[in-house]
Amino acid sequence: MTGVICITGASAGIGHTAAKRFAAHGWRVVGVARRLDRLEALQNELGDAFHPAAFDVSDRDAVAAAFPALPPEFADIDVLVNNAGLGRGLDLAQDAKLNDWDVMTQTNINGLLYCTHAVLPGMVAKNHGFIVNLGSIAGEYNYKTGNVYGATKAFVKHFTQNLKADLLGTMVRVSCIEPGLTRTEFQHVRFDWDEAKSEAPYQGFTPLTAEDIAEAIWWVVNQPEHVTVTTMEIWPTHLANGPFSFHRQTPD
Image 1 (tube, rainbow, N blue to C red):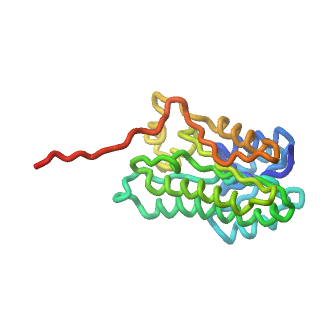
Image 2 (cartoon, rainbow, N blue to C red; image 1 turned 135 degrees about the horizontal axis):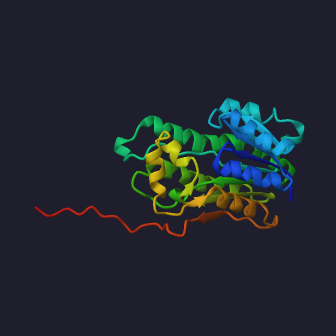
């Protein structure tokens, strides 16, 4: 199977790796990100199989303008990978910055919605297509300081499931892939590129890699058309969801 795949967040990490994986197997790739210089570097590497589309997925007007402006050979999108997403800060809810919450909801939720809304009608019209949404195990299991980030990823899962219901009767498929801790630029973005804080989660631990998740995306997309993998959790071997937490008080 080959075709046109659009990958958001293609300038680094999972999206960057997935773009190279699909291009190597004959796909034409639309790479979406804000950083044009990185997209152009990827285009230099991948050649005519790659089209750089520099815009912010959280900008509704930019998304609405970008997809109709794609060159004809990249305009008929077969697969959309909603990979763009981020975490900001790691604070208790009562200490969190509203700006961090805004950035996470605007990117992780609104950006995914805007891009989906742009390509889904075309997929339904031709009765063919695939949307892969990148969630997180944080959307399945709560953890202290996970507040809004986890909530945005829970949205991703439930939006995927509701899309599945809406698309019943068509051959358009939708999946949610939920990675655990993965070594990408994610922690650097979360901590404003503070190197010590960004590297701390990986100390003494083997996280997932961008290649691991790109492989999962590849596998899901290339299942037979009658098969839909609705949700896939991917965990590092040495990570598990924890026990219930208790705050016990000593009686007076």
